[in-house]
Image (cartoon, rainbow over all chains, first blue to last red; front, side):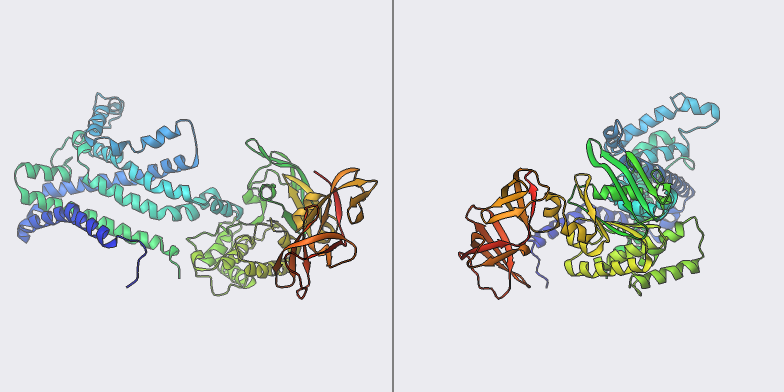
Length: 273
Length: 340
């Protein structure tokens, strides 16, 4: 066995494993156990009911749209924050973390107030025939708001560490700004972007507080999966709640597994012989 | 391509990095910018490349004013100090990058052929599918050069090309760069703080200090006729003895030394360790040995005169000398510069 110079491996490993088991694995296992106590047929009937399927669709599509939007906007924000120093830079940088710090219900109420038909934004959009509050667009906006920091905060440190000489080298070789961005900068940011992407998407799938105020929560139309789980819980139908929640869980896991795989591929150049 | 710098100035915030430097580089010449850190040599190189814009003065490429041409259109090959290879591209892709993004369209076959030719030139055949993290520092250096040469630059610029390599690799690469330069005949300008590197490699050495050119010339000229105490000290080990100059003669306890062109007043005598002879008796400056350092080719003696000035010189490997010995040091050759 290889001897390790640092002491304390058995103790620290024991404590962390115990903690992970207690806080993460146990509740998940309980959820799976609860869902599994349904027979396969009942399980399938619950998770494939029209109302549940409609909720998956609105949740997944909104989460996807929010994540794609944040991919571009978050990258742009991270770019501006690392490349330029402007008056109020520190303020903007701190503002990025606000969605993390703010109770999501507060965000939900604020967004609803803004986008309601008589709100500041809503009253401007209403004459154009655009309704945001109580529509899937509202869900998407709430998701955008709560998941923005993930992309910014995963990309920012990588951008900061990017050697300026790489861009200078690409310039001296005749590369246009666009070619440099696409062929040099973007590939180097890809692993961080993927990490931010998967976190942002997973967060959007599970977001609850910010959405329920703005969504209107109409079954089949603007009811998100997390809310459906909550409704089933309120009805004391724990098995159905667990079954629907397990779908969210599996989706989140699949998503994380996929991005980890893509990340490993994107980072294969770092492996030494 | 002939390069001409005319009174080029660069200021960073409040720090004046380059004070009105004028320099001519002939077509096909291999020129070293030599100076201590902070002397402005890298800034000059970056201004020639277009990676930095000058605040004043003009840079000509041939007859054309290139001062405001951006780096991507300037047609220079730049080799960065830490190579700046694209880590996510293989060696082959790194070398091909410039050709792929170029406005001049090349067929994939033509690019592949050029990559192979360049890999042969830099003696890295068979490594084209490796990533930069998988090759040694010396190999990375050669990839960086191949990548810069791939776009047929009119001028090759190298920033501390061998700075990050160990001494043996450095010597090999130096000889190899000389061969490549002879083969391609491309105008080359490189920056170094290592005098040995500059003297070994360059046709002409430009010595800089505090953003100004102090002296320029062939290695022979700057070595044989340094024009200032700074150049004398910077080019190699020196011994310094303080003295006074009267009517073109420096007065030392052991006699007089010619000091042509040196004004009367306090001055320093500079002597290379090789220009001092050691003898047990006879004429010279009496000195006692403090320490003896053994080196592969000779023995370095550190001695002190009776006035307390330290003297370093080399003696033949078989010479019997040890700390505490007393003897006479004779000056064979020396230069005198005003004290300052």
